[in-house]
Amino acid sequence: MSGLVEVNSQSTYGPDQMTGLEPEHSANEDPERWYCTNMVGLPVGLIGSTAFNRSLRRITIHGTRETHRGLFRLLAQSDSQAAAGEVFEHYMQVEFGLDPGIQEPSASRRRATSYVEAAVLKGWVESRFGLVPIFHKQRLGLFPSPGWVVYLQEKTDIRFHNNCIYQQFDLLYEYCQWSIRHFKAPGPTFVRLWRGTNNVEEQLVEGDARGRSCTMRLNNLVSFSASKERADEFGDWVLETEIPTVKLLFFPGLLRGHVLDHEGEFLVIGGNYKVRAHRGWF
Image 1: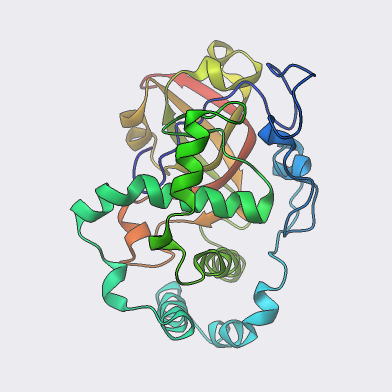
Image 2: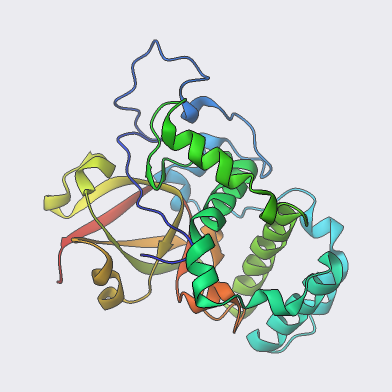
């Protein structure tokens, strides 16, 4: 998929199976070993594993709901997704001093900043879940590398860090999860989604894409579509999988008219996923 989150996820390793890394690489060189803790209270390796995707465990970002109890009391009074979205956006404007006008940047501005915005979102996943990105404009590989330098510069861009941006994403995640449980949409536990991609061999962890069923290592934040036809527009391969709803940061309709909603994509916390890979249109 394309859009706000630029995520051609390419890797040869992941939490389920480490490959392509020499044992002499230090923890500083190997980004997969940077984190042993996070802000959700579960092991980093578990969160990124296929076992977690079937476990039906809930995730909550420590302290977020406790800090914003008033928001969730107000949300409990909402009788529709649209009403809840209005409550949430109004709360964000008051709490963070957001100007409603900046929620709708022009198409040209969205294109100009999409890579940086993607880096900030990936940085948030890294900070909260302990999952490092494996791709940002290019495969990142071991640290340091030119790709890592670009990613680190863009994820700390001052334009996006002058108003508690990570705390805003914390609330977005918790609101998304509240909405899923409250309205049972887009699904109470799982949602079947599709993603267009290229170079599937570089993403394989286990199995063979040509055999359809396999395990792939996806970036720490990835975009999916609810439409097979739409996904087919963005790569030679289409990946089909069931996403646990606890790994959704955003889904279409969560905030109508918001810049994220314009892309019509599901934003998904990444890691290893069991997928069915289809070559071209199927």
